[in-house]
Length: 302
Image (cartoon, rainbow, N blue to C red):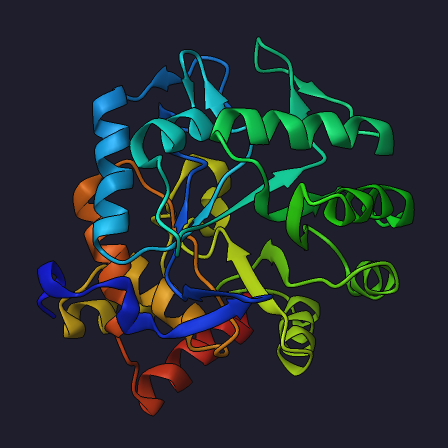
């Protein structure tokens, strides 16, 4: 693969409501710091390096960026880096953010936002990004309780014009059904990758049937989660990567994209070479034999 010339357009497109995006996007969680996201002793990433990665992502055709106001480290905020690097924004650039969790200035996690506090979080994202509206806002939750009040509060902000489209993050199928009774849902952002549970697999399928984008997080990181890409790959993953002349991370990402045309990837990095590799993965078409092998690994790990 000549990754230098491959753009995100090679991954195909999907719609978030009325907004068309390439299926390979960019996740900003790891951008503000080196090492593990949210770590109290995280070393801030060089500002020019971070902004260079963002600008290069857009040059490579990335038009879907995932961020949040709680993505920050000492001295660096993902939203403000995005604003500084990319404003004035291109018309086709879709920025999706998340509300629900919050962190105080020292980085400590706060209780999840009440319906009343969600408006403040939306306004915080608007201010940091320098926007008069947010393209997509995902309500992120922890737990299984009702989301009706919180999602209803966001639906009101959508009616007021502060939000264009709504999504959900870290949810269960009953949350999607509950939210859809309140306002349209354009995407579900959940953990997913090789080794995902049968329940996660079923949720991905349901989203596809309903034409809702499924946006997996940690599809490369796997068990590494906020610490970054796992090195604990199965021998089969290594073998396919060697045969293809690509990284194991690219194989994991390619397999995830093969799970349906509605799957949108948001791999994140602060490294230009890794960015290029991630984007080029959109052109990697796995054979039926390779998919069967990876499916077997997936089911054994689930």
